[in-house]
Length: 78
Image (cartoon, rainbow, N blue to C red; front, side, top):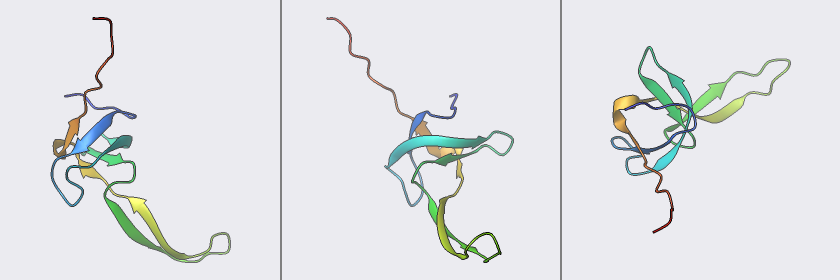
């Protein structure tokens, strides 16, 4: 199964199992992908001169083996 950026996928295992989304980033050497608005984690950012600190929500990586490609049904003539 070949997955690339922009592909619609469904999560099979984990806290977001059964949900679907779009791949926004892939790390091929580690077999990981980030899916839009899924597997959200809280990151604590330290304040700097340029940026305000605080708690930020962002997507974490999901293993490619835990994702399933969603087949788009094409509407055609009968």
